[in-house]
Length: 262
Length: 354
Image 1 (cartoon, rainbow over the protein chains, first blue to last red):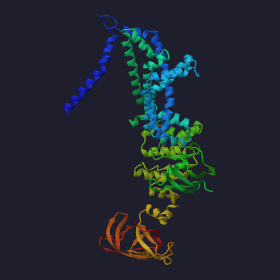
Image 2: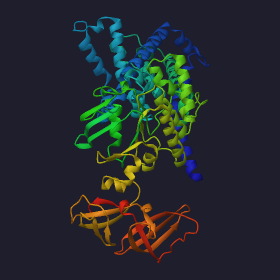
Image 3: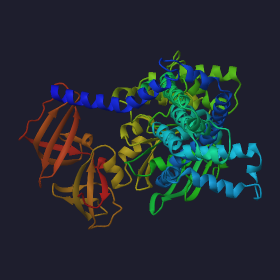
Image 4: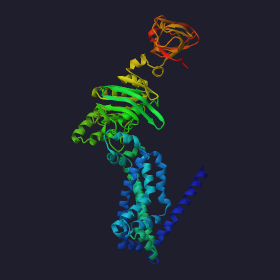
């Protein structure tokens, strides 16, 4: 018993070292911009850079658009598959895994071929069109995570009976979706949304090849041109991701009606 | 014409036929139970009426209106589910108000109706709670209030008591019946529990293999079962195998001796039959006109009831249930006992008992 606890403690410690050491190293490095002493100079440079504000603002807005698009596509799909087409579930699950298998570069070249300025739908001819394509691409990349999050949420409620109860009370599909299904999978949607957010903030390939001023390309550019600032940027990015994780926890704790299920 | 008409309903899921040639007329205000073992098609009939399934063929109409192709949300039919199906994100009051909101009832009127409904199911003051804060029985009351709040034309109850414990089940079933009477709402109740069906309904539909085996008042179903399945499914029965020796005179030869039924039988002479006798139809002594000599195998004193297992000639077991009366001797195992039954209480069923 005692030795078992010792061994598991040892492994826990090793895992902690494995994950934390690089972080600590990055953090330590990011503080050494000034020779001979620790300082926040690198952070000051990063946070003071107008390009930082511009790119992260841009990526933030696009991530919100991606989340909305993703939820609008995936929530009704997952709902319908659970309700009416349960036999199609393995197929849909397989399809949602495709973005993990097919590299984003394939998607973006497909976009460029299909929607270039001399094509039948020259979306890439305007920045609004390019932004739209970028959001579509992001939504595709986040598909595996969003679908799984929402599907798990749907599994926790009795979708078919709740739907039938709402139908017998006179509700149509839009009401059922908006008043019954979505509110009950809100926590699942939020966790999917935060994962999407994390993906969009860090994504490089799509944004770079569509030539959009996103945060990913900015980070890469920074990494190629500065010494201490990229480390500071990495720490900032980590902080944002962890804040997202914290928010997931917070939201799921605040939703009143799920308390009983915990 | 009946208020609800189900005509020649057939329903198949792929190759399996779950409902066969089912026809039923329901009058306004009636409380009808669909009773049968699991897989008999009773829930499917209910779901077709609700609009969650479409019949493969046949017609359903309510109040003269054909229901074919009318989606569930436009049928104005209230439904209560076995699993309560309350919306977990809404409070009790919001749950009850859901149907009213959907139909666009003004807010003040809806609030009044919600209060009225919650009062009716005995949950006044519970409006602000969430479903997870209620017991199963309370949740099912809320579900009932929610179903009847928008004043549906028909109320469907799909095994609403099955998930509850025995005590609440019994109290809730009389409450449901009382509310149904008060509102006069036409109600269809699906259950596999014969006691529920018997105690609550105006009429019971006994279903087996997708067919309605018998439709009738509870007493009719119990006393005059139309088929062997109904006889065996409802209540308990003693079965004596026999052969008709004279159909016109109503004579049947059994291992326990020849029995004279004193009525002309439908089946021809020589047909193998089973004679079915309810345990409470058997008397100790000579009260009935068919007398059997038996030996007591076992006796149980159950307070209000004495249950005996006796063996007739030919070693056929019979169960007897009699009310306990003071001063009455409880027969002991091994004792000889003369039992009797009224010929009119003997039900003749086709085929020998297994």
